[in-house]
Length: 138
Image (cartoon, rainbow, N blue to C red; front, side, top):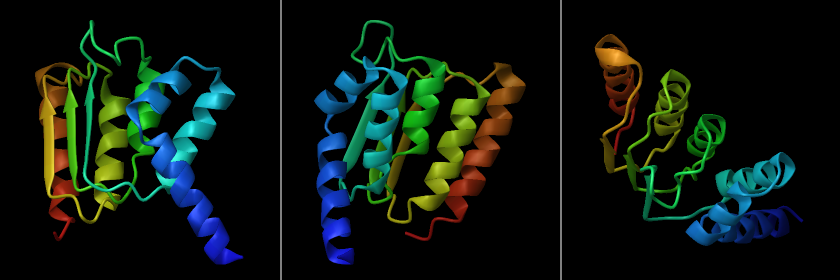
């Protein structure tokens, strides 16, 4: 029974980690979105995930709340993560820092053009992110 649950979570997570599935769920109501990101977090997707939140991009309509939920539920098995153009503020960055601390096989993290809250907020976020990465031993 435990193996069935593990396999089921893996399959749901694989489905949930596809860009098309996440984009569809982003247009869904809160219940559908929450089910999708829960499945994403339980999956065992490997490799790279990239999220570019630029205003004319595929993630442009995502609210700050949903973007924060998304990074808080990233699969713990990815080894590369790229975040671009995320102007979602401190809560988003805090969720990213906390999730990165748990992704033990993360080898590459790129955060580009991401706004946290001015120069002081950016420095604080950078320090927290560096602290989170220092606990990653890969």
